[in-house]
Length: 236
Image (cartoon, rainbow, N blue to C red; front, side, top):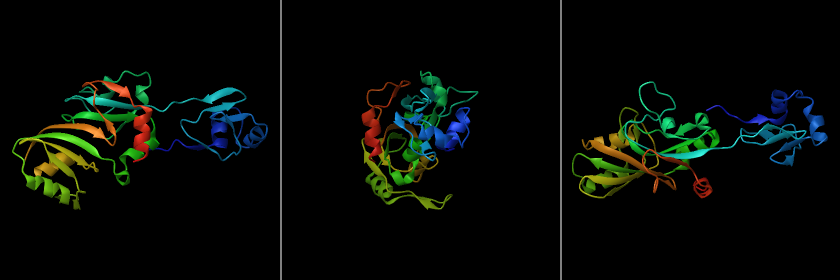
């Protein structure tokens, strides 16, 4: 994803009538404010969400958005699609067209989808090093056994990519249902893991990502993340 960080002098030259070389004088005259503080260097970083003022005039005032959606079956995890409804079609927000998806779900998979306009946040959430647990509720076509729990914990080899999945925690809820927690997001990973046992996934529902969970959010509805949810996941 393209970086949205810029040096202050370049930002000023791109968003005002002043040149890069003019910025040092503007700083010396204390005419530039960044997030309410007087700028002190022409090399200060300006992000997409830095509030920038010059001579009392606002040059940039963007707000970060963090939204969770309870995706229904048959909705595409995309921002545009000519054939099907997309996750953006379900969101009612004036800035929704700025959003991108953090961790897509398959067409018939339901549950938690995160969307944001903050590229740095979505990169952090998606990095394998973050080890952010994603929890799914799964309904299978064949009965489950304790062997599944052991194999999932040890990891399953995917020959096509020549990789072994990281340890995953499987909790058997009933003969045909389970709760799965994993920290990866390989292509069709959940279905392929159960495919190791020739057991078809009939229903797949994501209930949480890290400490952000769907509880209380109706299917097809969305809401802004709370500060508590954002702060909790910062610590992951």
